Length: 219
Image (cartoon, rainbow, N blue to C red; front, side, top):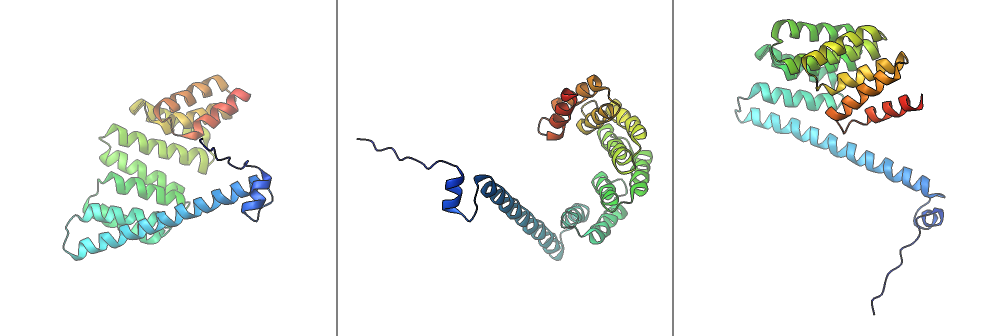
C-alpha cells in the first residue's frame, strides 16, 4: 500500500504554527524581505571579491589596466562608493579616451549624484568625438533622453532624443519604453501601446513595459 503524505494547508493557521506571524501574507513578506537582503549581501561580497581580485592581478604584474580599472570602478559604483568609482573611471579615460564602458558608467555616476547637466554634456561629447558605433550612440542618446524626461522634467526634449536613438537602432528597447511613457503622459494611448509592445519585443524581460501597457489599456 502506498502511503500519501498530506501537506498542511498554506494559510494563516500554518503561518502561526511555523513562525511568529499571525497571517500567511505577513510570513510571505518577511520571507521575501530576508531573501532580498541575502541577495544584496551576496552581491556586495561578490563586488568586494572582484575588487580584491583586480588588486591582486595588478600586484602580480597584470597589464590589463583598462579592463581591470573598469571592473574595479563598476564594483565600487555598485557598492555606493561613487568618489572612488569615478577615480578609476577617470584612469580608464586617461588610458583610453574612447572607452565606451567607462563613459556610459560615468554618465550613470553623474545621474546618481544628480549632476544631470554633466551627464548630458559627457554623453554628447562622446557622441561628437567617438560616436562611430550606432548602437552605442543610440544607448547614449537614450540615457540623455531619460535624464531630460525624468530628472529634469523636460519630456518633450527627452522625446526628441528617444526618436533619434530609435533612428540609429530600432531595437533600442529603453527608447521605445520612454516613447511609450511620453505618449501615455500626453494621453495618446494608442501610440503608447504601440511603443510598449515594440519595447516588449526588444526586451521581453523588462516588466516596466507590461505595467505601461496595463495603464494604457485601463484608460
